[in-house]
Image (cartoon, rainbow, N blue to C red; front, side, top):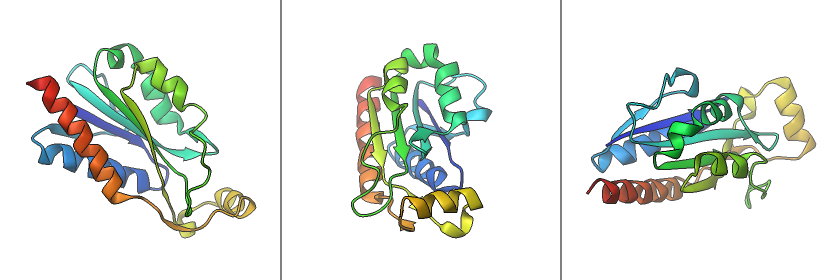
Length: 165
């Protein structure tokens, strides 16, 4: 079974989450391919998809949102999981789901949407991003819950393997 893993990431942290998901799916015998949203020509060759985005100002990044919107019809015919990466801190803030997540889940009939805490390295941020981080007093650090991401990947792999048998 061929699985698309596609994410929009501004500074690379969400891309690392995608690589972990793809590696976990491959470890379970699935053919997982990581592609950025803009590089996905069509979904014809894929049997399933895991699509995610870093969250900025409470929303998915445009490339991931555009992929879901552009390919919503083929995605509705496949098993799809969506995830968001972005809350930071302990406990992670903001606690609300991204503004557009529910709409995207409904648009493609996603089996699940999961929010994972993200990572912030202020040295990699632009001036505007640093100003926003200071204004909301967001902490710097890597808050990604790798065991939770790996467990979610095992859950997805189990569902896909059950569908394939």
